[in-house]
Length: 272
Image (cartoon, rainbow, N blue to C red):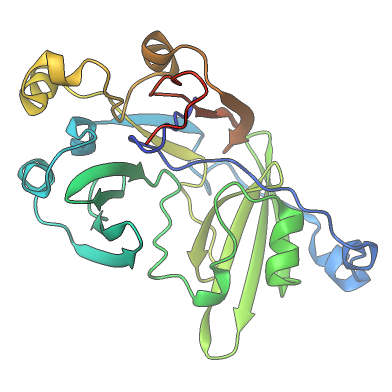
């Protein structure tokens, strides 16, 4: 699995992890916690087998520069809109949590500037506030540094992989679970239960060529647009090798974070 990131064009949620060092004292676990982290043998019918589902998403028909009217013609009315005011103007983030893969579309200066698909399936609005610092791809040492020691830390072995299930609690807020594979956060959920689809990964299919051409209003306007569902080979064919590339993993599968230059440099002069 390869991930394409091309700011400020269309992006899939980044898996770039942050590995932070802990003080030596914080790395020492109490005996009681070490005891609670014994591996638990799971039966194969508790968790769904690892698989990748490729699903059609309407977001694959979006591209940079579309108007809000064009977005809503394709995606429908958003379930929610977040608005931010900054030095560069007003930014609106349109949320579509009901899509096969939850989608957010960022509108800057009245035009699409970013499209993000949440392949981890985390509804941040439902999560308690104290879990906010833990994000997709974060290393376990950073999770412990940000959130402290979990009240329970379980290990589950299944399908040749080990899941670390950290459970956190905070007075007055719901309990929360953070799940790690290969010491990296793969998802987080409210409550203490183990989600059966933890190894299941949904990735977007590319847009239907006929729909893509219609939505772009002509190939001349669209020939260098990055779209959701493109492969790394497609993007490399348009922009060459990435300026930055980092290999990682997600749910036990290889992942790549890549940044491509979409506007060539002009001499030594800064671009406007």
